[in-house]
Length: 191
Image 1 (cartoon, rainbow, N blue to C red):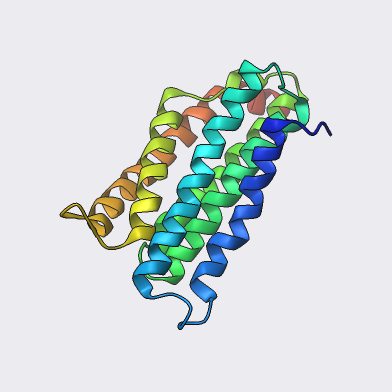
Image 2: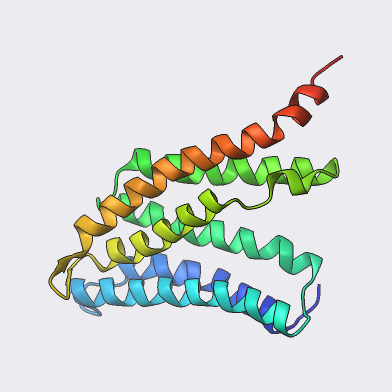
């Protein structure tokens, strides 16, 4: 494993996960409800920025690595899953929506791993739909964590709409990836 700036940022994102969760379990006299929301939102946004920054730096500095390519999406999925579980616990989102998004991430990760093993990883490369889904999700989660009014906008309502959109796009993109992998899956199941 190479220690370089991009991989260090990815590890930092993983370290932020328990901090995000812990914010809501600290003693009540440490932070008000609003302060917890702001702190959790800042942690998630910082993690999202490191996600963009580690990829940018890896390409710009020529510090891409197989380990970094493996760890980066794992860190992303862990952060999103942890945030969604916290949001369900706080009753800020629906458990079914969280289950759809987390379930899709696990399914597509497994599919990509299998396709890579058989040398067909390009068949399940990230699609435009997947990028739109990720954008909706990465805007929705901070809004739901923030929970309060933001510049006169009901963050909870907007976040809820965006996360619902992300869930729909999640199913759409999953069907896209499964359709792309279907020829290999059907060929592999033949006797």
